[in-house]
Amino acid sequence: MSTDWDVVVVGAGIAGLTAARACAERDLRVVAHDALAPGGQLINLGALADWPGPPTTGPDLMGALLTDVMDRGVEIAYGEVTGLRADPLTVEAAEGPVTTRAVVVATGRRPGRLDVPGADAWEGRGLSHCATCDGPLHAGREVVVVGDDEWTAREALELAGIAKRVTLVGAAPGWSASSTRRLAEAVEVRTGTVTALEGDGTLGAVRLADGEVLDASGVFVYTHADPRSELLDGLPADAAVWSAGDVTGADRTLLTAAADGLRAGLAVVARLEES
Ligand SMILES: Cc1cc2nc3c(=O)[nH]c(=O)nc-3n(C[C@H](O)[C@H](O)[C@H](O)COP(=O)(O)OP(=O)(O)OC[C@H]3O[C@@H](n4cnc5c(N)ncnc54)[C@H](O)[C@@H]3O)c2cc1C
Image 1 (cartoon, rainbow, N blue to C red):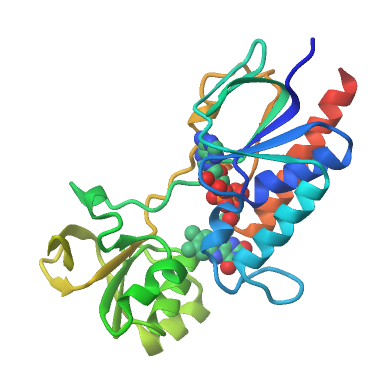
Image 2 (tube, rainbow, N blue to C red):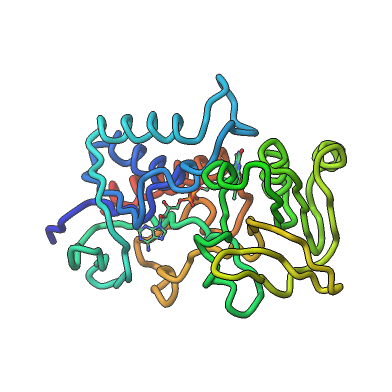
């Protein structure tokens, strides 16, 4: 049966672009859809940690990856994919249904979320998930960072170079000892949770579970960054659909996401060469 594409990749972050590259290099017809812009989380990163090779930034790496996959014939499509159907394999893309022989779902994780009623309403009015993008808006002001992992600690350290005061609030801190040492010099660290965001139009303060209220023009949230895995729900086990990168819930690093994308791409090639 003829299909619109050999491979549809959903999500053009580092995992999706690596999968797309592996397939295109082996002469498959590949399109990569992204709901926002190619690059995914890379767009938000300054200097990269745990990345081998010459020092680079997220946007520079994203630019190089994108140019490379497009040179290899991968088409980039813009818009959210809203569903997958198995028989025949069909992707519900922004421009309508698209048929394909295989799909790689590389949709990453959601931005962080606070377990606080009405918190979403503060998005763009002080609530952020990106120190590189929004940190400069808070130069010389006070900010709160919420999260527990290594990347949260590094975001707090980046903000410490910009804001007047940074308070890092974590329920169960899990960052490295070296980050703990660096944080001790520049950031106030609290164990606890946020119970409310307060302000008049724009954010003014963050209330903690122990009742303390911290003045803050910005709150940077990295907790509850759940995998965006809904597209994988309800598909038959033998569907030609693979997942790769942060959506799998595995390690959150660029290298492991890329390795996962390569693994998925090669699995697609192997399956399509059999059929
Ligand atoms: C604050 C922070 C700092 C970090 N710093 C580092 C670091 O220095 N070094 C390091 O190794 N790792 C770092 N990481 C981890 C790293 O960024 C991620 O592990 C990696 O980017 C995941 O890549 P991905 O391709 O799986 O997902 P993503 O990069 O999240 O890409 C997913 C893409 O899918 C798209 N998408 C989602 N749903 C749909 C849909 N339905 N339809 C179409 N498109 C969709 C999104 O728009 C997005 O572009 C950091 C993470 C965070 C949160």
